[in-house]
Length: 307
Image (cartoon, rainbow, N blue to C red; front, side, top):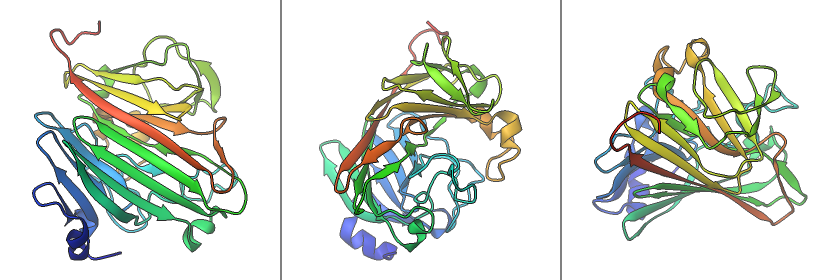
């Protein structure tokens, strides 16, 4: 990995973006503009903070995250590829794929009006081929402004077709998980990972009352998190994503995660754009696929009760 000084010589934008030494000494891109601030680690190409001007951070990051080589960062927006959760044909493979603990390359940092666009990339190598025998080129492009836009761009550089899963595993910071409501998935079928992945159907809004781990199927529309404690709505819009994952470990699941505090589950909610299980992506040699997300935050005006 290039030195932080060398990266700054190439990519820093005075007063706007610079590469700094983050937790554990890992390089991160720090962005500050009149409309928003953000942090993105080269480790996993992972967004760990996005804060619109005048507001609180939208992204949750565990105080117990392990910022070190070979370890996943708990919180932020991990990039999951080329599988989600456990690899179905190899339980020894790393959870959520082979790129979230890799050091990605910083390709560019650019300004466009009131936004900053950060592009990072990674390619297949001996380490990835040990678990997934295909060649690929993966780009993560984050556009930081009054909204947070992310694009995950996969190019099949292999000699044959490939099939893969993917997710932008977003941890949102919430005031109290028990009080949030998630709308936009009423009537959608989902696989319940807390119940042997049985297929069920959502009725009304989602409320966290116990450990929740669901993959909503064949859904492409936007989802909203209503947070009466922090008095805001978080809207997730997506393109070329056919599944949406909703997760909160609750107290029972949090206790089994060494990099998550016992009570931190109360201030997080994961709602994730993905393509997984029955909806993977198939690409012929040379083909490209882009999954895109847009996160928008709006304050709740007046009563904080659900409409």
